Length: 162
Image 1 (cartoon, rainbow, N blue to C red):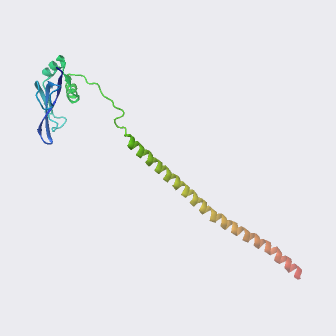
Image 2 (cartoon, helix red, strand yellow; image 1 turned 90 degrees about the vertical axis):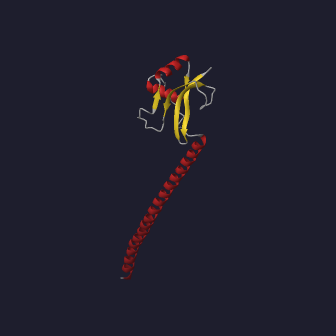
Image 3 (cartoon, one colour; image 1 turned 180 degrees about the vertical axis):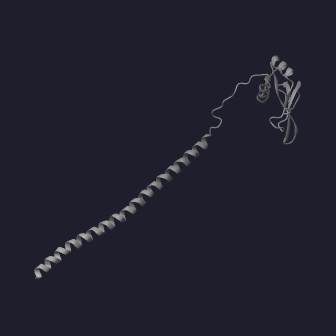
């Protein structure tokens, strides 16, 4: 018979209260159990001593007989110093799914396009701002040159007329 040390739920709706029980692994969660070895009240603060009560002697006995604790009970046993629990590491836990990755890529592409369009608009604005200044300088220069050219012509006409 496979024996498990696990939680059996009790309490009212949205007011959970658990018994730490030793039961046949095939029995229902809240069904028949072999022995109750503690309690767990998740409604109490984490630093409260009443949150987890555990009969350490009976827990050691059942572990020596071959009972397998559930993950949550394993945490309680580790905190009590009865059973060492190896730290777990799941590097993919926080990684988004495929659809979320695709949405992120599309969003990044749209942002890149918007930045490129903004840069292009700024460059066009710069060239447009520089072009009128160059045109004005170009327009002024011929007027000055024309005035300089006209002056000798006027002087030459005056010289002929004398």
